[in-house]
Length: 174
Image: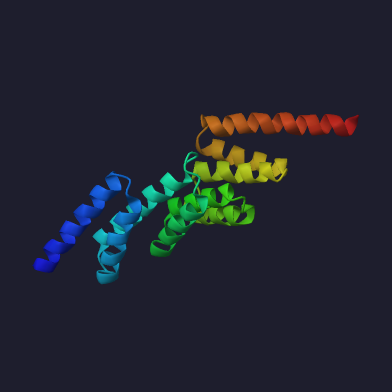
């Protein structure tokens, strides 16, 4: 009974630290709890949730700690290999680190788990656009729009790519 109360107290302490954006301290507690209780779904889920929050915080355009963000999301994929959001966010971190092939692989893994994830399709379009593979980019933007015809990011990207492809065709004619 005492161990159970201590675990509950530590979980609560970690939740408070997480809410105060003291992620590293919260993760230290949760990692220790997970080592002691590797079969506890509650501990595992709170650990994953905290890793998500921390990774998102690190991936923020003001923080720019993409390497640490990558490690957070990578850790989630180890704890929960079928977590499509973790693979997707890992792809974002890789993209931010300009590790394009790794980003593409992470997005593709996320899509194997959840084929209708429009954000993932859109980001694959961004990768192909960044590598000047415009026809492939257009395919992914259109796939995202098949899922959500009013997806504004994909609509804007699709329009820009079509303009770019038209421009390229005109240049080839001249």
